[in-house]
Image 1: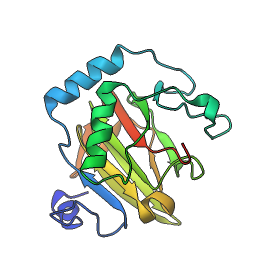
Image 2: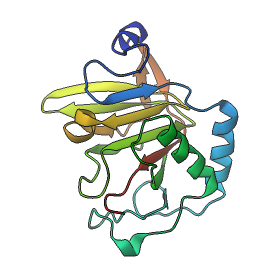
Image 3: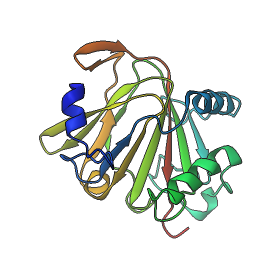
Amino acid sequence: MNTAIQQALFDGNTSQRADIAGLSYLANFITKEEEAALIRTIDAQPWLNDLKRRVQHYGWKYDYKVRGISEDLRLGELPDWLAKYARRLHIEGYFSQRPDQVIVNEYLPGQGISPHTDCLPCFGDTIASLSLGSACVMDFTQDKQKVPQSLEPRSLVILSGDARYYWKHGIAARKTDSMDGIKVSRRRRLSLTFRTILNS
């Protein structure tokens, strides 16, 4: 999407998209130093190979087979290196209560995720995803509409309202994206998705 057009779709104060209610985008939510520290910390943790991509679960483990969460899947409190960002998201008003579940996804060039809506019985009314390492394009779809949103490294995308409940979001499995009319090669990307567990 053309940068000028993309900027015009956002309110200058809230970074709220005008064409999808409840979709907000914050560039440079963290610094380059924070990004590097997060990547180092994540890579020092064990990975799960439940999917075609590698994942890590914190707070609660999401069961991909049954597409749900139960009390026996509770892992404990978020580690300090994630809890600081969960607190920030709450204090700055992006979440009405502090997120208590995080999934880290690793996307290598050519990997993506099918269009989906995050589990409605499991997770609260706000979802936030922090991008590390590489840019990509996330597509939001509703019926025959498809709206691309560029996700730059260190950016935060927040889904609430219509964006959370009535639009699907996904990332096409490819090795390049078109950004501002330029073909951009993907590199390794990590996403940290923050959620609240319902009835936790």
